[in-house]
Length: 235
Image (cartoon, rainbow, N blue to C red; front, side):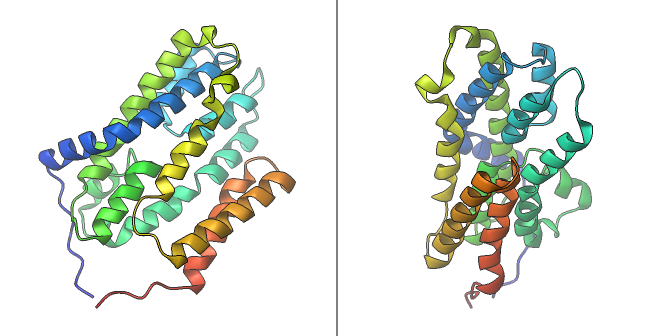
């Protein structure tokens, strides 16, 4: 297998990554709009909602926080829920490690600030296909973050006119977005089995285990396929 070299990251790469991910970011805008609408029904002030979106940038976690936010915030359950939902970031970061480890430490971690599902999936596919730059990771992350803020703000400003978000399908935005991510990259029996097992395990956990545990259960189930069915490297 050819040696892995440090990926490139130039201003031009970042700009190309931004425009490449921007069309996909429209899903994130609608997802952010749904979050803004839901936040109007919570105990959080609009300023608090926007501050959370700007600094946290984790849609599924932020929806979970809305259900837990009140006069008395349950800090420990909130932290555990956040850890469970975002534990997938550990796997995502690990998948990029063979390339990122070759970068200087500051650049390595700075490039991960806006790590999200879409820019991770497309960056990993690029790196595996020999397109050796991080423009999609960084520039794409900026596009996703910007659309998330725009969507949240729009939901807060206009959401009072949407009485029933489910009636226009806003509750399905996240599912559609994640499904689009499944289709990125090469498709084979190994990947299909991993996604299928993840779906079954996540659904079972959603039905019979505590709230939000289905995220980590699904991730572990899919990861099990990778552990026992190793991909044969190309020579």
